[in-house]
Figure 1 (cartoon, rainbow, N blue to C red):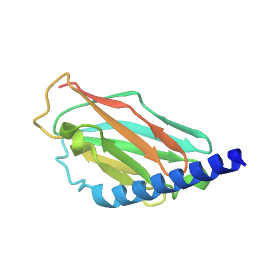
Figure 2 (tube, helix red, strand yellow):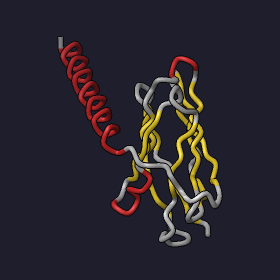
Figure 3 (cartoon, rainbow, N blue to C red):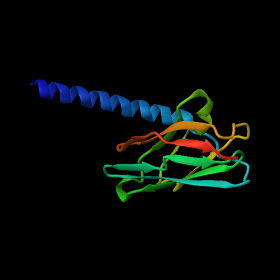
Length: 138
């Protein structure tokens, strides 16, 4: 009985987290109309029981950061949410689905400090999350 109660409690908690994730994604979509002075390529690969992203992504100021969504066939409709973890990394916030577009573009602002690392999380609906970082290199 105790195991059943714990399993039900975990299910309720996870369902609430997914609902919160869905609410957050609807509020953080950014415009991706950037200065076209360069592109920093990256990726998020995901599917059944796997999720990976480049651990440290080098980025340059005033460029587009392109994140390719590489989903397994059954996960193309999963929402990928990318959220900056600190107040000074909110420019990273965006989301997308591979079924809508295989790429997400993030505008990298001009005023970032060279050498600074910006921490963010990548969450894939129904798969999990990872916590990579982006480093400003110019």
